[in-house]
Image (cartoon, rainbow, N blue to C red; front, side):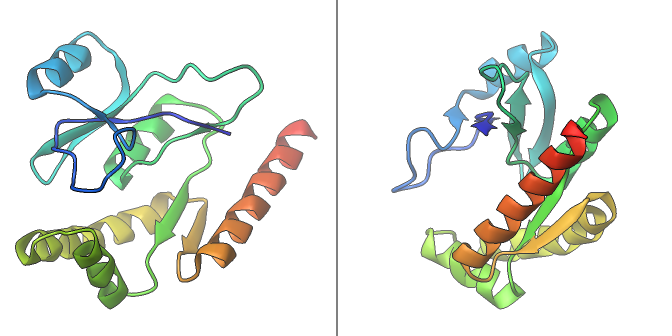
Length: 155
């Protein structure tokens, strides 16, 4: 598995790893988008997010951590895409997770509202839905999906 690191124009959050995203200026992002440097990109809550065209090491499956608008673009542009919608167990848990990472109440409210819309679209788009209630269980479920997809592809 190879994670394609997304670009974003938002600021890095306190305590967030430097490699969580490729943090760039709005101008750099816009230039890359104009030059066709992204497989997909979108504006989310006023910030740009996008995935550069993947260049994985040979033999690796590409993983994109993206929202539903970006996923729709990937499905439209690429063959053999497997979409997994990862959901929190509830809106209350999602709000608590956002608070734990330092989001403001206004941002939490905006993200929860956006999440309702994204879940509706994502359920229609996704091949699989995984609820992230316990990390170990969610990882096991994702590993199962990967195994099934690899077996189907090699058949």
